[in-house]
Length: 391
Ligand code: GLA
Image (cartoon, rainbow, N blue to C red; front, side, top):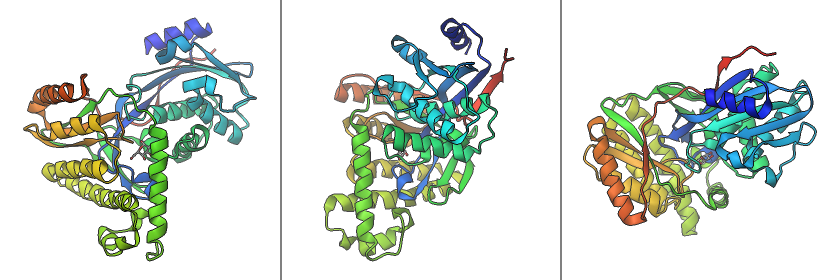
């Protein structure tokens, strides 16, 4: 934080007046269910994005990221908040600023923001939702706007959908906004009802394992999966009176699946519907401290994402499957959108070193380079860190 403040000062020649943090997230289970009206079960993590900021007197907005030092300061005016490919990473904050400005005319001056994230890039730990919500929090705080947290979350999703062009669901922004220390959230994406559940795994810990492979073409494949689910839903709706795949039980699906003749669409729907059931079971299992069952559900989730949803790939499969084979691991699966990024494992605290060693060996053998491992605390959602005196 102190480095970030120094950087702010050397870039903008004044002290920042506000400091904030937005977490990243893991998703325990409930993958690719959020745009299907199903359940998700994410938790915010202490890896995330830090930001410091200060109001200006003119209408200029300056954004600087320590993660993209070479790009330098990205500047634009409050009067032109259109998407601009040249602005690269800054389009995430810019989209958020745009939608806030449209809604809140009291945002009538520019500001300077410097940020630094410690979420590895492209790791499927929601660095983009983290930047979106961080920006939303900073701007609303700078202008003393009393915005409902859920509205801020929805604006973040809108940035992703309309400004950036990824048709993602609400999970990432929701958990970055509503995360709670040492708790996961079971969120019903249909109703937005949610429950906090303590992430108490007894003698077990969650390990995050990074493929260190950058996601490529993930956005187009993501949007393709979403359309496939919509197509499968349209077929099932000929028989079932439902609005989303999330409303269909596994039994009702099995009784009506013959209406989907296309094997790909059939498997996509099967994943969305069975994953939704697994997520509810995992929630029950965690509440009962039945970690064995919880772990088996993680394994089944990975299998379904690999075979039916086809969003894993050799890197994520090697991580999850080699972790599953380690003694003391109750379960492992990819987390987030897939294609690359991270997997998680539920591992006995005395077996973490074994996990890292055995998975690394297998991964290097199969993929050719090493994975990374993180052990992080489950964190609160986006928040102000300190408020410094303004000038
Ligand atoms: C990405 C999206 C989320 C969700 C996951 C998959 O993280 O942003 O909305 O769909 O993929 O579960």
